[in-house]
Image 1 (cartoon, rainbow, N blue to C red):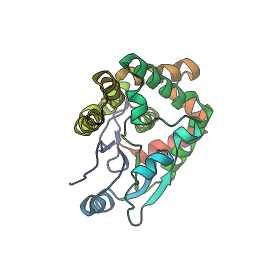
Image 2 (image 1 turned 45 degrees about the vertical axis):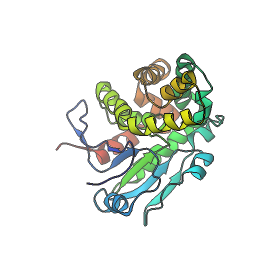
Image 3 (image 1 turned 120 degrees about the vertical axis):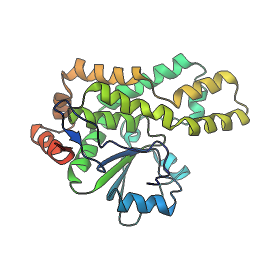
Length: 254
């Protein structure tokens, strides 16, 4: 199976607390789908039955590296940061933060906004409706690196599918190995542009995920809402009926 996409994976095969399994070839996560070769496109359509792409990126990100159009696959742009009224943050902006502590503080703020910001809640309400509506095909959801917006979206889906947090962390942290080569190349590009080692360390930190980021997200959900189910019902218009439907579509006893 030849899928040439950075940070690509299928959430299928992960078991939940009741021993049910997330169905294979239904929920796919990745980095951006730029310059896909024909073999990758064919594999996504023929082997994964891909019917919808959800792109979480900003307009400037898309204009710099647009997704490759795939015939007969619906493309949806769901700009989470735009809905949050977040300021545009380029990789150079992260390098300019000049310390790992500053990057960590910024990233914890991003994860807080992904949960509590009304615009983010609106965006994830739409996201969950798209996921619920795609009963037969597969959905791939992504941002630029597939690590924060996508990482939290993946964690949210797995939480609502009643997966143990330990398994959610495993999926979340796979990003750090999957993105290593791409991250090394990005850091080298900035080194060649004249950024100093302190700035490069800040950039490198921003290119990876940390367990504490997801810790913060989970803590905020529990502190403010009690459970993921209550958070989904209150903030994402995702009640118990929709939750039951989600689990019937995406979980299997096999």
